[in-house]
Length: 154
Image 1: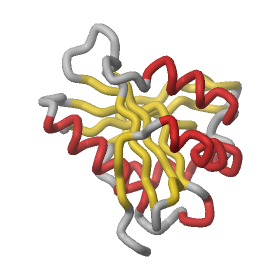
Image 2 (image 1 turned 180 degrees about the horizontal axis):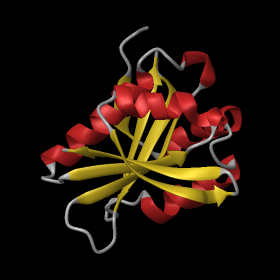
Image 3 (image 1 turned 90 degrees about the vertical axis):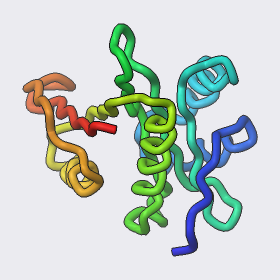
Image 4 (image 1 turned 30 degrees about the vertical axis):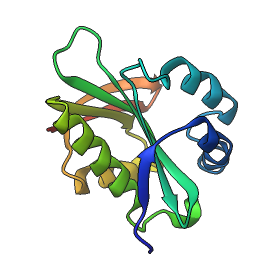
């Protein structure tokens, strides 16, 4: 894989990132513009990063500070176009987010995912990237679908 270019997300990236969402089904892509407009302004603390390959946006990472916590951030979304998954772009996006937060003297990054078999690869991804399973809330998302929280000290 060509080395990815990781940069701050801009409005110009959004249409390509909607395609990423359509193909990954992480969440409905029509929500992306409103989410970005709400949190993508320069005065927002939210972190939006886009991963590009050969000049095309093919993935993104979105994290926000946790309310009423000192230096704790929550990675709410990480998505990579399926055709380039497994080539290191997700890890590059996570590492860039961690580096950014570390440089801002933040101390902890958490991420929630599902405990179902469908998310087994997702959980393995976070473990491979140095995250530890910190908590599991049984039946959180739905009956039989646990919420699994991973954490990483920065």
